[in-house]
Amino acid sequence: MITMEDIIREGHPTLRKVAEEVTLPASKEDKETLGNMLAYVKNSQDPEIAEKYELRPGIGLAAPQINVAKRMLAIHLLDDKGILHSYALFNPKIISHSVEKSFLTSGEGCLSVDRAVPGIVPRYARIRVRATNLEGEQLDIRLKGLLSIVFQHEIDHLNGIMFYDHIDEANPFQEPENAIAIDR
Ligand code: UDB
Ligand code: ZN
Image 1 (tube, rainbow, N blue to C red):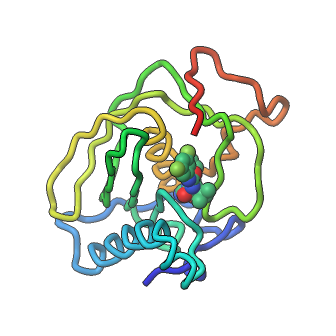
Image 2 (cartoon, rainbow, N blue to C red):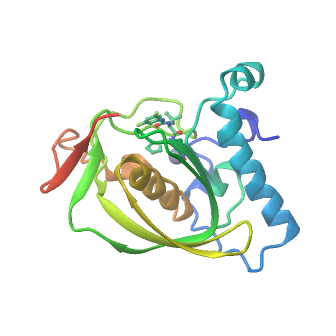
């Protein structure tokens, strides 16, 4: 089981590497790692399990965060309509995106960052992602709102990018042009 001890923190070189594509069909080991990543996000959202194992409640996790430099991510998120979005994906790729941007009004954090970094993180409002799931099926997913932001945050990890790389240093709260503000 993955716990906070397995999650590497900023300063670790793996977080700045471009992760390798996973060879498909995925090996048993890669599937097991990805399954464990999804279990982490699920477990961390269960108040009893989270308390018992001291898990920080997360909505997404990328493999480099557990020091595995491979293109895998897990996302588990209940949206405002009560719909559960649960994904464990190999080789996710943004195949298209809107011109319009979006951002979380309260900014972003990260399971690998033990400090608050205030500021607006501009994201694309809508993206299309192509990926392969644990069953080996290729998916084409259209995303918007918070889910689109989580995907972009996790895919950034696969490319060695941290959320604060996107914050305008000189003007951290400068709203991007043509952007939707998302209140969580
Ligand atoms: C998170 N959770 O899991 F808008 F119901 C963050 C942490 C770092 C604060 C735990 C989070 O943003 N939860 C959240 C947000 C909402 C509404 C809601 C719960 N991550 C995952 C991460 O670090 N992955 O690498 C950071 C998020 C920042 C923006 C998207 C992912
Ligand atoms: Zn993160």
